[in-house]
Image 1 (cartoon, rainbow, N blue to C red):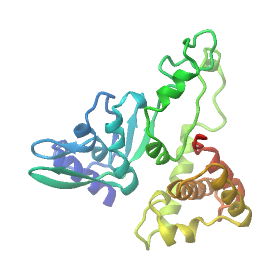
Image 2: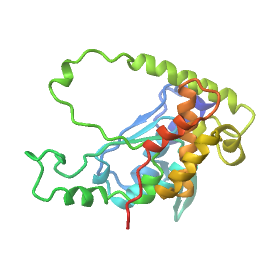
Image 3: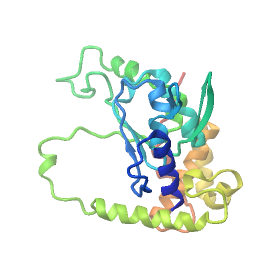
Image 4: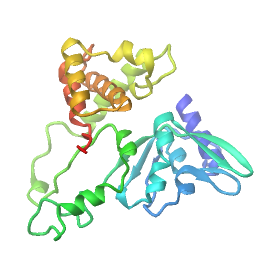
Length: 265
């Protein structure tokens, strides 16, 4: 109920609340890559919430990530980190909630055929480095999971159904969220993503083997303090999905596999 109320309040301010009724569906927003900073974070003469606030408690999906203006993408740093966005205008200074799950997709390069010698452009692989560099390092550091997905072939489309389908995954996720709601019922957090400081240390500290691996990886991968904290949160979530009481080395290893390693200078 509290989350439904928060989502409905944002919709009410934006003028999109249907019939004055609480909405019980998590929002999904997918703005076009031509969206302005005001459209994404909020603004206007009469300041209204932007896409990042309209997606509060839901998903903000950014397709073709490098095609967004860099300044527009960097304006998402504050809401991703703090869960709120502050909009300052000459006639108003407003703070909107913006606790979103950011999901972004992009091609490896502008032509989209990196790794395929028959189709890749003449500038490969330099074109990929230039294209990916359009997304700033600080923004990428705030994205917990980086997954490379291979192109789907016609043969892939006729494969048998995977052993675990979407319904089964959804059930495991629901169980993990219920577990986290119980875990954090007496603190100012609802999920592992919101756990900070002593709360995160209390519930996400890995075992001895996990601590050693994380310490080694922090140096080898040059993890920032933010990256280190985010690895702990992801490891705790992986452990929850596996039904494990504590965070072990295997959970830390999987969390680290999703981090984007800092390039060597």
